Image 1 (cartoon, one colour):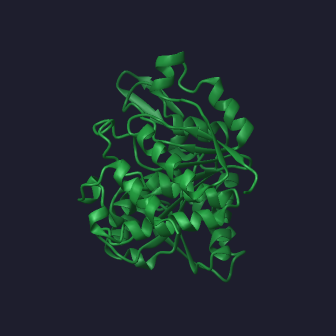
Image 2 (cartoon, rainbow, N blue to C red):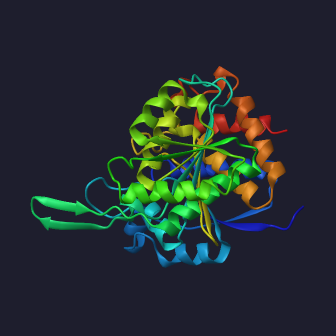
Length: 335
């Protein structure tokens, strides 16, 4: 067996513990040389330690550099800021990659979809630079820089070249935000010139939302800003069966955090009915990242096999299988 590698594990809130347990079971079945170093963050951490992100979280991430993270709830409109955003900013996880692919016989709105979304992950409105001007007025500052734009667009084109992708689509709202989005578009076009073998086009974000619903097959790799990327990836998830099927990778120069893109689903937490597919796909991406490509491909093939039988669907897909029963099916399908 290969040398064991320790991975930081943050189970998260809500359904997080249930779906991370599914990943642990699958990792054992794969006989992947993984050792988990588990820590807590979010509401559970506040309750236990008083800190949203305890020092222990930073310590294990600093030590191991690779993280699998379950969903962590973020209060809406008040309360603490997002753990996800905090970790992305702290570790400068500048590149967010969200693959959108149909699996098995899932009742998707659109079939034969295979799009890779590259989302800039450190700035834009998600930088959280806000000012309360008065009791009746608040400002949020949109930040776009050449450095961050060059980095994410280069990552998208490099991926396209390495994976025999033919087209990269740049998404902005540069017709209205001529300075901020204008800078993103200008820099993206400059980067695109370095890759003449890759077709490039540009689409305004509102038009992109419509095009993705009507004809998503025309897109291959998409690169965009932080907020647009978050919104469009949820839209694309809806095309293929839901957020329970979409993984995300957050990559920096030294640290990588892999996660499901969906939330903590507190309404179904503890019921044993959560779909672990997105986190299992994130784990497959993690395995690729650490050089265990064979294990990663075995896992993806197993998921495709399981989801090719409508009797294996979890409740979010219109089926009846519990989280545990679904995980059993995945383990049985490993080849």
